[in-house]
Length: 312
View: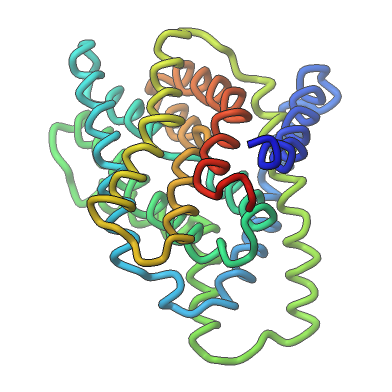
C-alpha cells in the first residue's frame, strides 16, 4: 500500500495546492470557475478525444463490463435511496444523495491518475465508466427531480435530458474520438501534437481546480456527509467488486481492477453543480465532496493496493 500511496500523493498534493490557493483567496472563486471551464471544455476534452481516437469501439463498448458496473452501482443507489426515504427525505433529495453515493470524480481525477498509475491501457475501461455515469445516472437524477416536482415525466423532461447529454463536452469528445477511430486513419501529426499539448494541461489543471473549488465548500451536516462518503468510498467499490469478480465475473482481470478502483473515487463535483442548479441539498453534497476527497487519500490507495498487490 505504501508504494501506491506514494504514487497517489502528488495528485492529492496538487489538489491541496489548489485548496490553499482558494482558501487564501490568491485564487478567487471567479478564477476557479474559469480554470474549471478551461479544463472541462478544452484540456480534458482534448485528452478524452485522444484516448478514444486511439481505441476501437470494442475497447470502449463492452456490454458485459457495463452490465457488471451498473449492477454494482444500482445496489448502492438503492441502498442510499432506501436510507433517504427512511429518514423522511423527498424523492428529489433521495435522488441527489443516491447520486453522491455512486458517482465518483472519474473525469477530473480518475482518468489522469489511473493513466499514470495503472498505465495507458486503463483508458478504455475508464472511458466506459465515465460514459456510463454521464449517460445513465445524469439522466436518472434529472428525470427523478423534475418528475417528482411535476408529478410526471413529460417530453420536456426528456428533452432536457437529451440536450444535457449532447452538450456535455466529455460525451462529445469521447463520441468524436470513437468516430475518428472508426475511420481507421491516424490523426494528422500537427493535430495529434496539438491535442497532446492541450491534453497535457488536463491533469494539473483539473487537480488544481478540484482543490480550489473545495476551498469554497463547507463541512456542514457531518453525520450525513460521513454516511454518504462511506457509501461512495466503501460500499460502492465493494458492490462493484462483488459484481465484477463474483456475480458477473469479467474475463479481463485488469478491466475489473480499473472498474473497482474507479468506484473508489471520491464524490464528483458535477453532482454539486446539479444539486445547486435544482436547489436540492447543495450544502449536503458540498460536505460529502469535501469529506470523501480528504478520506480518499487513504481509501483509494488501499483499494488500488489490494487489487494490484501493491505493484501497479
